Length: 381
Image 1: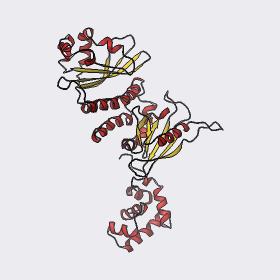
Image 2 (image 1 turned 180 degrees about the vertical axis):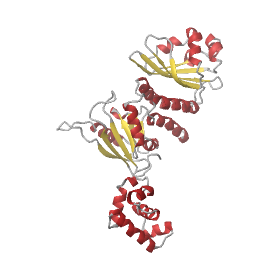
Image 3 (image 1 turned 30 degrees about the horizontal axis):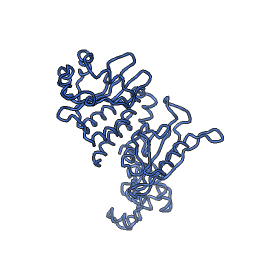
Image 4 (image 1 turned 60 degrees about the vertical axis):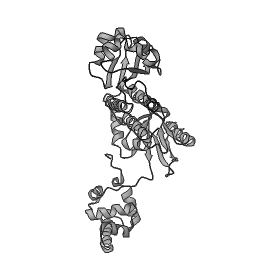
């Protein structure tokens, strides 16, 4: 699959995991998926127990009157409704598998309804079927296209498990303001790359920094079911061990710290660092116990924010520039060159920096800065 297409797919998937508003995330995902698959329209539908007609709360490429017009005038003449409504979870209905193009063009449904919306081929994927509820993903293709290419079919297969996960949250009512909403917003605001996972490594939410690392698929990625997986079998085993251990009770009955591991990267860059810890020691959000996972890429450059150093220690702009460069490993000679200052000026700045930070040695100063909030990544980036 082309690299650009994989990036587009992960952009869609990443949006589903990093947004606390499931409805908005699904709406954006459908719009992007419609373009990616060169489809005519896409939609998410649900069928309640005792009902015969689906409702479509989220769609792209269809106007607001589509479902009401179908229910009022054409649902009774649809040759496909009973087949679709009888699908089991995980099954798919495709019009081309049940009726030829020529026969379809002669139906009242096509002539009076689908033709108006340029719906020629039609697929319905039953994603959820439980507790009397059926929910799924519908997608249509115009006559000019008729069928998906192999690449598009593979892309759709990659997207559906993640759409299912987000759709499930939406139907469960978890997208409403509440614990999950607060959790997602908190993770999004974290300066470090962080994800929250459920049992088995299924990702519930992730912030932008974690989404970027996972999306690179270099050491850690998501499998087709939305679970964290490593680049190697050994790495996946280590990852699952610390996730499972996150909620393993110790002898005193308290929950254990999950653990850390390194994940090798196919690119040859230094291994990713992973830390897992229990988010809580009891079930919450009506779900399994949750684990928070922090990711660190040691090859990412450390950025010390000079504005924070100025605020914390009342440094001048020139002093903050010297201190920040010293903290990330620049030599005094290199600092002089990059700031276009003399060695005497640099030493003067350092003396004042030592005084204001109450340090006396270069190593002590560097340690102070790198463990300060000035070295935390900007959560807005």
